Amino acid sequence: GELLETTCGDGHPVLPTLLFHVELRDEPGTIGYWKLSDGPIASGSYEAGAFRFEDATQHVGVDATDGHPGCVVERREVIEGALVQGVTHDGAVGGADAGVPHDGGDAGEPRDGFDGTTTVRITPTAGSECSLLLQPQGGAFPALPCGFSYRLRGTRLEEPLW
Image (cartoon, rainbow, N blue to C red):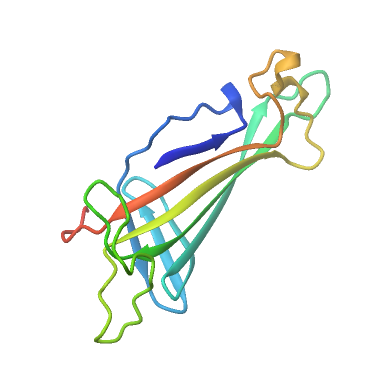
């Protein structure tokens, strides 16, 4: 993945590029699966070559002090993209029919990669006191909520990774 933007500053450090392996499965018209080798399976939607996965977790950012509730932030990630044809080994997308979903018929070529984005938003939960996480109070975040996003490109591997 290639970093597109970040508004989280040092509160959530990001790398300029990411390299990881993922298993992307589809059952057309129903559920898709996005699975990292060491992570959970995220289920989502897959239809006409497009996919969407969403996952949210909550994290305690600051312990409760002086009777104030601690800060709880939600980290929500949305992965969206499409299967594409003509992906080169370096992840570039090309070809006259790039991005055209495979229709499952004999005339279409199976897709050999995907192109998409992952967007992460970090948001305080309702009722959380998160001012200590902000830079003016000595924290690392310039502001909350904040977020970051990456452009994702993938190539199909013939052999399973795991």
